[in-house]
Length: 530
Image 1: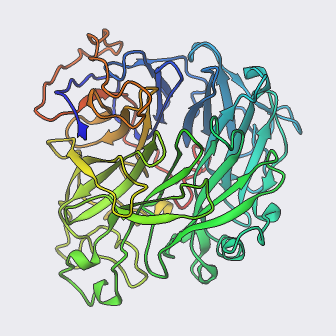
Image 2 (image 1 turned 45 degrees about the horizontal axis):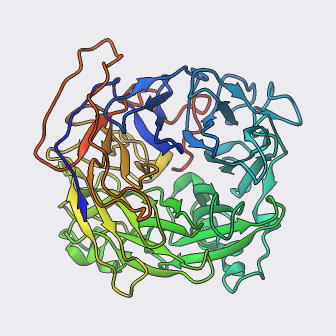
């Protein structure tokens, strides 16, 4: 059962968007998000957070990961080291974020085109790292995964085998797909040829497939060539694709984890990707599975629950061969957005998402209608959004059971949440939250969610499980009591708020209302369509 205690809210910094979060093997939490103050650390299960040394003040899309030695890896888009726009960097710290070193590309020592060094530009990169048996963090395999911004819109990796010191040249996963390695391989290759949204990279650290590299992305289908591919995001991204490599990234086996069918959109604009402790992959995603053309404007001005976006999970208990689901997470009607997912033991999973009770309108392509209200002269969107969490401990059964918790008692966002990335129309659509929230579990299997709140706290928060069942049965399943909060290191006086819901909220801080927005390519990619 998902169960949480009263909470404290700690102010770390001003508002920012799109937070990532991870835990190391000792339970230290790290979070990063869109802001020039980049990496935060919590030493007390999220009760308080402190800013670490900033690797690079020029930040764009970012992410954070750790290896088994507890070294920290920070990925960044459009950093200051590159003279070529829209390149990705990987920085590494072996002292909990106090000092950092940037990974170099074997081609140019990082001074021209950074770690990625790809001529087509980078959009939404992710990173993971793995220390092989008998190795150290200096011999860790580090994988940088992304899709290109103004090239063929393929998915790529740069790989380091010396702990992130040097990275190889970009490798096009689609050109190295063993399309005949699985029944759905040809579909994965064809449908990824124009529009892709990278959702994550993970390296298996335990279990029978230790060392396997998984990548995951959303794809549309060949008709997206007619609608502008990644730039417009006009196509419904209905394919969930996973590809894995057991030979260090030389060859990839693809699987279509799930195909919702044309006009059934899984992009909000991202899906969420994770592994359990045995290396089985999971994807959390939204979808309007019951959508019909009658749901779209202007034909339908009063959408009902048959038109709504719900939250789902798919997974294979055999490491990617046979996928099960989709399993619906939410029980209430409305619109469910921004999936986040974390897993512990096989079949034990936590999912987080944003929910509003309003069923938002969609266009004739099956996508969310920008502005999330009907196109009239008086169109004003006042949807109230709340953070929710769900947990299943029996996802391997035919009919998994779910417990659900509404985490935020007050709305954390009001209005539209546009899912068209840089194609979001200005003035009447809203992208203040950027594009996702994220969830991780600590070594006890207890959940931590990072999300932006631009309505109530106007900061970036972490919601941290402090009691109840966690998703690692072999670990301590009841979290330790949260220690007394450490002093807040920001200039503002910390505020203590006790709330009557059973979650622990702690802030991860951050900056700016995305004032520089996403349209400035030199600052960040844009999040290219995302």
